[in-house]
Image (cartoon, rainbow, N blue to C red; front, side, top):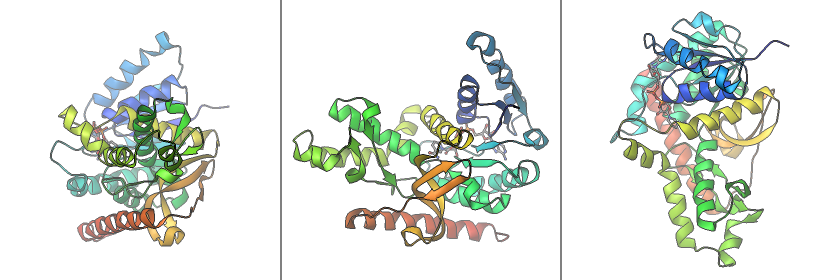
Length: 319
Ligand code: TXD
C-alpha cells in the first residue's frame, strides 16, 4: 500500500511542528509548502536528517510550488500571519483572507480529494473562506480550534483536581476566540461531571469560572508570554489528532469548526461543535441539548462569527 501524503500549507511555527509530528508518527510522506524562499526546503532537510536517529522513513519535501501537493490525502493549512502582541485575531482578517484565496485555489487544482484542516486565524471565518475558494465538499473541510481549546481546558482542570490529564474530558463549543463556550456540565473527571465535583467539595464555582475564563483567553496568554508569535506545539498536536482520525477512520468524537446546516439553529456557518471524524470527513455533527446559559453563550459566539463573515464578504466581493 502506498504511503499517505500529508501536505502542510504554511511551513512556519505550526507547520514545522506538524511536519515533525507527522514524520515521527510515520503518518505518511510530508510536503511543506510556503511562499518563503528556502525556508520550507530547509525545514524539510533538517527534519529528514532526524529520520536516521528516530527511525522514520517518511520523506519530507519543502516547496513553493503547488504542483508538489498533488494527490495529498490531507492538507493542513496554517498559511498566513500569526498574531503579534496587542493584535486581535480579527486584525488578521484582511491579510489572511487573500492567503485563503491562493491556498484554496491551489488545493482545488492539485488536491481536490484531500481532507482539509484549516488552522489559520480568525479560524471560523478562514475555514469558511477556504471552503468557498477550494470548492471542496463541506464535510471535507474543517477548522481546528476546539481540540486545542478543550486541551487547554483539560490541562487547567487536571491541575485544579490533581488528576491525570488522561482522565479529564472537556467540552468546548462555539467560535475560536474569547467567545468560545466551555461547558462544565459535559466536562468530566473519570466520568464525573464538573458540577458534581463542585458539590463533592473538590472545587468551587469561583475556581471553575476562573478556569473557564483562562481557557477562553488561553491563546492570548501565550501570545503575551512568547512576545513574537502564538502557540504552536499544542495547536499542531491537536490538528494531527484530527488528521489521524480521518486517515485511520477512527471516528473520534472531537470538537471542530464544522459547517452547520440547521443544527443548533445555525444555517450555513462554520462554528465549533462536536463531530465524528472518519474516512468520510465530518461524518456526523453531534447536536447536544444545551442548558440556558450555554445556549446564550453559544449564541453570542455564533453572532461573533456571523459578524466576522459579513466583514469578509465585504472585503472580497467575488465571494
Ligand atoms: O487554534 C487555532 N486555530 C490556532 C490558530 C492556534 C494558534 C495559532 N493560530 C493561527 O495559526 C495563527 O494565528 C496563524 O494564523 C496560523 C499559523 O500560525 P504560525 O505560528 O504557524 O504562524 P507562522 O509561523 O507565521 O507561519 C505562517 C506561515 C509563514 O511561514 C508564512 O511565510 C506562510 O505562513 N505564508 C504563506 N504560505 C503559503 N501561502 C501564502 N500565501 C502564505 N502567506 C504566508
